[in-house]
Image (cartoon, rainbow, N blue to C red; front, side, top):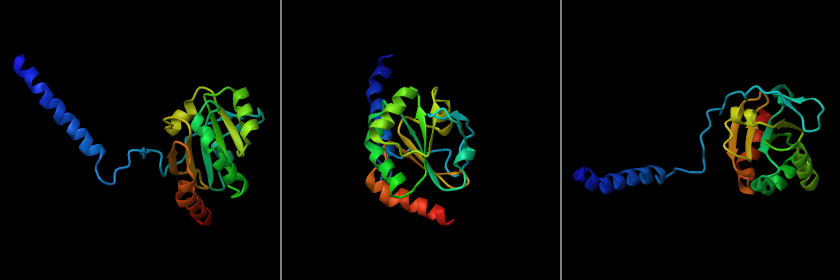
Length: 178
């Protein structure tokens, strides 16, 4: 027993060294979370809309490259990225569909009244099941969709201006041409 206890610090050191060797390897970005959904059709869903009129389904999104943004009124990073979503919708004409994740309808409406509404339509995912089908880790998350509804990019966390200019807009423009 004493021998095992004397080896414990060495084993712990080897385990930690192995972890850091993998986590800190060159070219590894710890902020990039892989998605099993890339290049696959978005999941099937049928959500009531925030306005109470109609439903948000994948069929409503098809036909033009678009963004699907999962957000919540209680999410501070959602407020940070909101001006960029407003710019995309108003100045760039990008259709943005929203999923209100585990949020109260009244709170989502108040959030949009305060900050503006960039969304073409918003589905209410009160229990978070649709978000889970997309693989959402937390809000905000944004998906770039092609005209056929395939997921071409996933952004975990708030959108940033640099990412928007260097990755999102070029991808949307390329999808528009294809």
